[in-house]
Length: 114
Length: 228
Image (cartoon, rainbow over all chains, first blue to last red; front, side, top):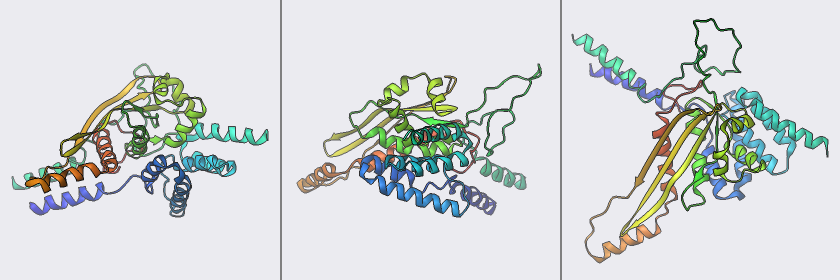
């Protein structure tokens, strides 16, 4: 009987340790960025690197990460990269499509009027 | 009889993973872990009742702050996406959201919280909004130690303006008192409490409050029991 309980326990516990998504330390980096905005570049680099890793492993990117990279690029003035990453978010998450399409459209409009 | 007990123990162990997993939405036609691309239009027979579509995406609004620490709202904001997504929803990127709202003229979280939820949700195409308020975020210096207290209120509101879930969580941390004798012990305790950096303490209390509260929140389409 004790063996049965142990097996059940191991079975249960092995499921609990896995994460739904790999966030690549997003919350820690976001915390650092809010505490010190000068860490924006480090935040961008770490997020982008993490997402490239997810892509090569053909995994699911955590919700919103592509879009956050896009926004960090936008704040650096790189509208091209911003659009690229908003598009990636759009393609990865159906729920993001309305918002991402709005952002991409406004960026394209800005580009056309320049 | 002994075999029956064995089976019961095994079943109990399996079921214990289900405890605290929260409510599951009883939406029609929705399968767990499959992204829903949007509602299907269908004609209803007279025997069917329309259940409100379960939310699949959540907008995390900027955090309202009733404490004197100006850093608190952003710290709390940074802790919310992961547990909320872990409950099985698409979560809108919080930093992007904050910046877009600022561009729309919403610099104050209070003003965002006062907006009509339907209009706010429509800006992003969100199904529901998570509002978090910091009621307390303080460190009390009690003679020889520091007690850190956080107090948060959480509300999940649908794009139709219906409150789906709400919770409140207060947590405190106070280091254990050492029974040291003599002046040297007293001075050591004073030094420790004076130099203790409370930032990591605030963060861990916030994360603990979130995980306690979200365990009882409703789950979304991407929820997988046992995963966060």
